[in-house]
Image (cartoon, rainbow, N blue to C red; front, side, top):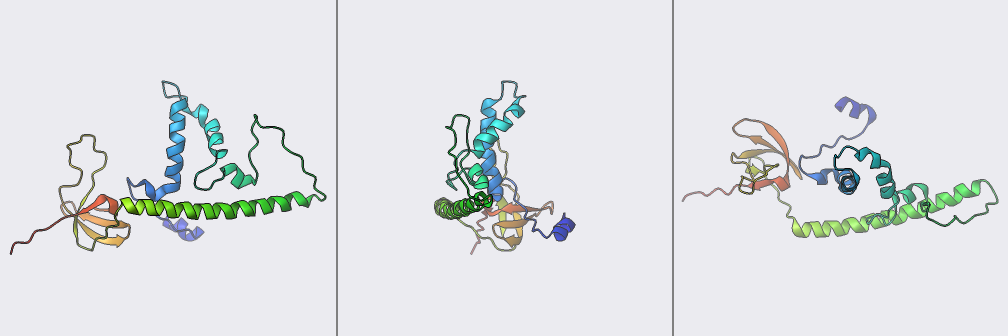
Length: 201
């Protein structure tokens, strides 16, 4: 993969496990898409593939809260025409190229509005997120505990018992090493807790 990245010229960014914000766009789509499929499939859960097309169509023709446009309109520069809609209005163009010129103008206007809407909504999301989530920073060689994912029982340990050591930092991702097994892993700062060390006088 490193060779392909150098050949094509893209930057391969690794996401941290159990942290859906790393792939926010994909996870946001899945959070909308998967529940719809789950509602439509039968009791045997074996016909979900029959509903892929209608669910994708509903997704592409619905207005998204962040952009204030539907994916269909962002791509084609016009509102989608559904079977229940009235016949579309007719337009007269003097030259064959007039349609292309008008479509290009529409797309530029939509793209600008979409960009403004996304920036505004992202700022709101960040303000709300920062109010509820601290932004911790750890130093090299700090002993820390790592959150254990997949816990099913309420009384089970939520964080590792054996401390791990911070090796490298690339905020918000830290590389840690297990002192016992010497295994290194990549962890998001939200899954790290510092250890309070009491020193006797």
